[in-house]
Length: 339
Ligand code: P6P
Image (tube, rainbow, N blue to C red; front, side, top):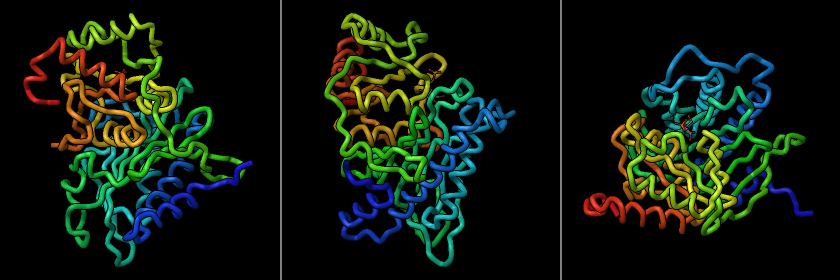
């Protein structure tokens, strides 16, 4: 039986891979692991302690906020505040970024973006949800409070990103730009243990994931690509929780799409704390992530915290094929030199 390698041990070992690492990123990643355990504890018993259901509020994006969204948001912020390694956070649940107080005299070098509970509309029906996070090195003077530009960085500047999936088991998947590894929470010892080493996405797959209910609202090139998936007898899987749908693609191969619609002309999903972190993970696993207008997700320079984008993410051969459909049925996009 393989020796147990905990998340803490793995992160510490990997710190040695970074010659100039001074331990801040290591302890920040470990603190996110702690926050994930706390959120997991409540997600798993949400039905028992009356934190299911809808909070009487909407977030910046106009999404109905679930009580557990707010709980997860609070726990993540307090864990990151205690870490002393995080200068500030940007969350789906907060209209603006939230500077965090320095602990002692040490200024913090990093900021964290996160969706505290992605897919939370699924909670009340016991369908898996997840936390998505990304870590940036600050671009402003670390002796001062963090600024908006610390968060408005392209995904290529992420130093780490990942997600926690609260499903049949609780899995933390992350990358620091040297591959992707997965850790399963062992409740008997309260530790995330290495369970999926060096994850690689299959080049292609038998699944496509899109909200078929919007089919008639998609542009022609997306409808033709979706028709092609159906003609190829691919299986449609759509949970309504991006982190869960993308997680499936990571292990089984496939493509996840959220194109523009009349209601969401720029797409529904948020660039900063949904698409960029998942794009970093998927690219590190050998996959691709582009907009439905063929721009690489990680190259986009965000203009505001809650910016929405369209996305096609998953197996490289399937993303390339989708790109061919866009080029064939909407040459205007290609003419704009997107890709
Ligand atoms: P729709 C959840 O609210 C979310 O942000 C993603 O996790 C998910 O993929 C998407 O929205 C679902 O949106 O319009 O298909 O219900």
